[in-house]
Image (cartoon, rainbow, N blue to C red; front, top):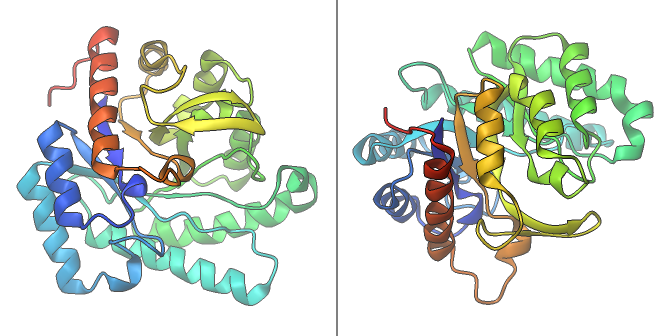
Length: 281
């Protein structure tokens, strides 16, 4: 396994500064966020900028295992859904432009909607996921769906069921265990269900139970990273463990995105060492 960081927690940090900082800390890879409001927002990534960022990644020795393109697939308005689908397809095209030596980065996205709509809108979610995944499959790109507290996919069981119903090999999981932790699922329960389907991950820290929970910077909360890493390894996961700093944390008046990354690296690098997991290439 490798240690990564998502620029989800760095919305206004210039990509040059973000990559230099993460590489200097010792991260192995990065997930770049391309949704509106970010310094690497999709619409400003010209062909020349895409090439420049790819060179920056190589310069700093950082892998790009995933792109955060989180865009709802469950908009009820037809025009809004068409716009979202177009954006996700453009993000897939970006993944092709940023492909590494083995494969393009996975596209992380959330489904949207609400948990109580699983029964009534599941068929629609399957159909829309299939349409997106068909486009991605033709380009060699994997769709990494992220279950999320409060969304239509909010349990490990729903995520597994969606994968089975879609029935395409390039639909996998961006496994953010924090959403299950705050719902009361045990580490083993979540990992045993989703590690076999995971192509990428997020980790945060947290306290409390949903809906009265808080997501935190790694090292501030109660999450047992060592037990989690050992469980992921035991269940055969060999990809990236990528930290994500939530919007909850970013709302703090004194939030410092570079310091958050520094604290995160110290916490997770120590957990890798305590778990006895070798990150050497």
